[in-house]
Image (cartoon, rainbow, N blue to C red; front, side):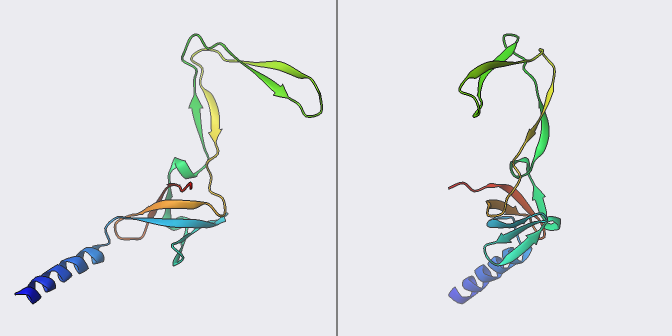
Length: 131
């Protein structure tokens, strides 16, 4: 009876492995242009196999200052050539959207955490690993 139970368990585990359920894998960027990621020193993935999230790519977005109390932002710029610093101000008009760029793009050497999609053909590059 014990051998039959072991055989059923083994068959079930083999079936799960064959269906290639989603799994978490780690990789390292080996090329930024074109993007290539090495997975656990076994497999090199190209951009055709990768799905990038905003956590790992440059993208543009919009911001607005909806708080009516925010009218100006003051800062001091320290110019290396001068011993003086002068106050500068940037004025914002309420409810106007301003476009900004977020620079999250991957660089050679970045370590990433990925989700291998079911079937194993595509990988979602979820985020950078920071240690």
